[in-house]
Image (cartoon, rainbow, N blue to C red; front, side, top):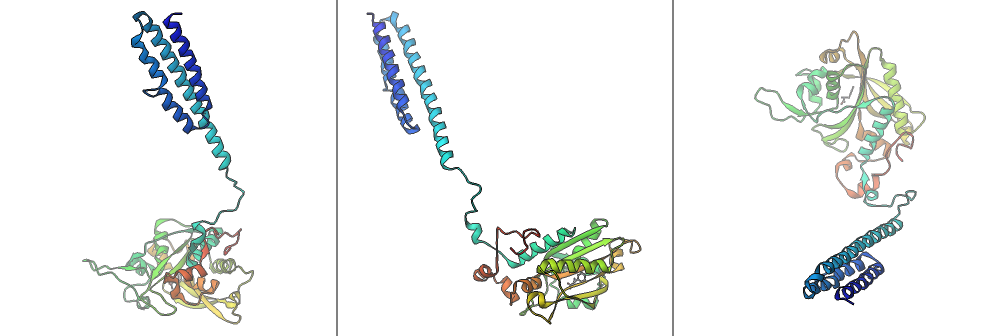
Length: 361
Ligand code: PHE
């Protein structure tokens, strides 16, 4: 037997031994241990290679090639085994972690959080008016005098300006003053200036008045409504408000009372009361909104021809509606950020108000 043939059979034995060892690795950690042992600097393959120097020159080439071949086979086997084990590990994990999408949602942090009643009512109103074909418009909380008053037919020195208890910013060098909007009605103006009729929008948002007692807070919420086209009349206004109240209070019939009133930006103007039996107070009336047909001067101020276009507007107090619907006695608690209050009056984050699924859950 030549040295080479001895070396070769030794190599063959080594190869089958290493392949067997690789095959017995049961997981990736074991395989890694085998790999380090087998391919390491002092491992069996390296040891074989080190014999090269002791061989006669004519045998070295063949021995080196044979040794490299073993190394290649072993490396390939390691890789194949790794792929197999990785796949098996993934399959085991998938079998173990399988998600059952039919299970109810697990209570997590989102079940602890609460939606503020005003936000809830905000969403309920948007849902109801969206169903009636209205979309949502927005305007800034910081307004110009012109938008909050002038364009709404409330000129300077008009007594209505005093009634609004306005928060003004310091005057600019040109004498004009910015203010915190005292109502959502400036969104009427912004909407009419920016799009052509037919218009059907609501504009929910914050408003500010320098006023504070048990039933007034310096910041509160309103929802403005505006409908402009060529044929809209008071009957439509009345119908929309009735539909809204029935849907909002989730009753089939609501008693409503339209009282003559005055707003500079509507003519005629009305205030609306609802029969409080809807909220368990029979015989009492509660004022919930102001409304009317948009004043021709307001249409003109927005570049609309009052001979062609007409429509109605309304403004509702959102906090007031919330108190009525959910029996909240004190308005100030809305803004006191008291967690105990919020846990009591708040709504689940996961219940989105829908007309089909129930507004208040
Ligand atoms: N902006 C009025 C208010 O704040 C309400 C209102 C809006 C009245 C639209 C008529 C039309 O009191």
